Length: 160
Image (cartoon, rainbow, N blue to C red; front, side, top):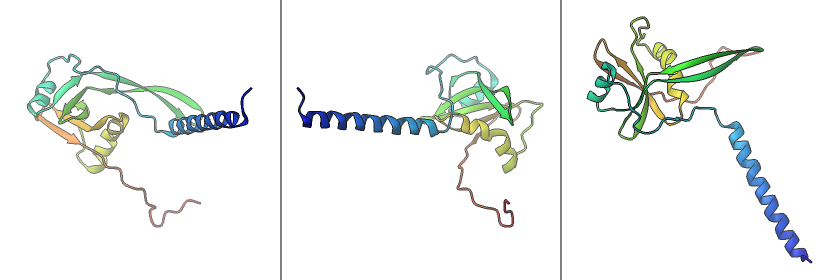
């Protein structure tokens, strides 16, 4: 027959485990959804001009093309979309998403142009430190990183 102290200890352990489980579940539930990288280290990559430029700039290309499926919900309509990453490259233990230049998609090199074009890639994967843009026409690798500051209200723009 269990003693009253044994029952109390068992209830205390069950309550602690339930609290721990609830806190972990709540943390998982409210965590931002960013993609974890599924590729194996040092996956083989085709030799291209972009890969050559990355290697000359000191980067190690660790993975090739990747398609990331997205579900977009607008009002009550759900649509499927996707984002394409050209490569992943590493330098000094930092991992980067790589986008290669396209003739039909020139980059507007202003703060808003770079933000609109590359921010989704910079925020998509939790393990990455930014985006590398390989301009094959200029033979240049641009490193793009985003530091998101604290939001502040705009004077004169009140929501009613």
